[in-house]
Length: 516
Image (tube, rainbow, N blue to C red; front, side, top):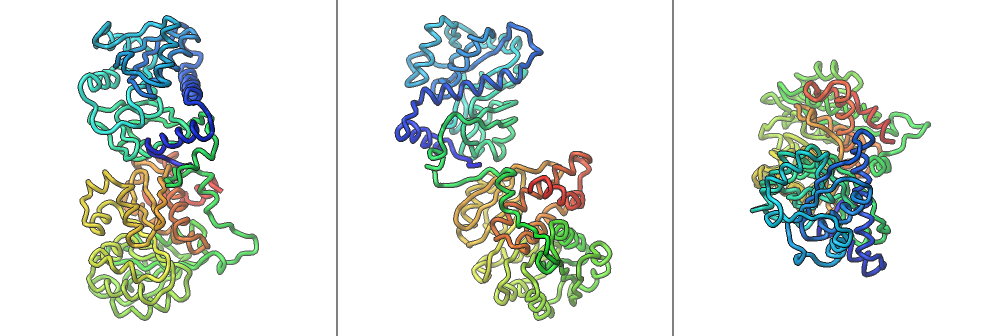
């Protein structure tokens, strides 16, 4: 599903109105009806009339939606307390039209600071079944201040259930940044396309349950915006997973080389290899230091262990030829889990980049090694996927972790374009960007996946999908989604506190089964 900024949504609106001929007032009416539907879904049959709802409106199109919602709820017999934070003179266009309809219906309007007080607002919200937020729309930037801040604080403190219209007031629709004071919605009903700021944190935390409703815009209007950010869903990911034909044997299902391991870190490579196998790889080679061979063969008996000489508890530089020959047998390589930061490993990665024409999934310690000289990315001969967490991304870019977390989409997109790689910036709502500038935001996963080894399993899923025939970007997109879905499945039975990386791995087959 396409996700957009507020500015892009405005362009879609304008195209609909100017090029297709759908009046803005019709789009506003459609939006209002969808919000009313969700109000009624929340109220259900448990609340006898009269229902008490507080609606708070600003002055733009978001307020116009709120006025139209107020009209429909009033007609349905619900008790409405409509608070306006601006006078009628501030209203224009379709918002003004909808307000004037309310005037004609003699629906009472409270103007905060004119004919009502903050104390009255507090009392009304305490009595109400729900509050509808129509204060600021998708054009909001910066900080909520003054009376708007006071109103927002009152809503957050006293509301039993808050539904935001299109976007929770205080979220930047393009970045997900939030004002220091921001409406914390229980549900947001957004229109036609999800807004990027609702999908990434911290904006996602203030959005509550996100519902995307069509307001009657034809697909050609949405496609008018060619800059693409995609909110991943099952239907989209389903198309990216390679098919598995009845006549296949293990040679058709992908041969993966996992180059990993150092003393104390055998588990990382084992998780990666297990994830490859659980995702469907036909054959997995584990190239590890000799002191880890017995561990790897015990934990992953299905994998072929490749014994490498060790030096300083890590893979020795003497193994250059062995690794080069191993990669010739394979369809894809996953390099990095548990590899250590031993300096001599730089030469191994450089040799792999220079000599192998395989797609590469690069993670963990391999990223930290490449961070010494990111020009190495220009040497790789085939598609590359990098899977950094924010700390690794900081080392790769020189940017602070806080800056990266505040600008996850921008940083991911720029890095992918600069080095010609697919980037998977891990974290809550993982962001994926390919070298062409397309961005994808993941919709699956939970806080229980914040556990050691979770990233190693993701590397294995992506590598397996590449080995089975997916291009690197598609494998990264599908891999991230399946990884999160496997974590969600594990959390159903184990909860989030006790979930571990192997729980994710063991639920990969179920995640695939629920997706394809």
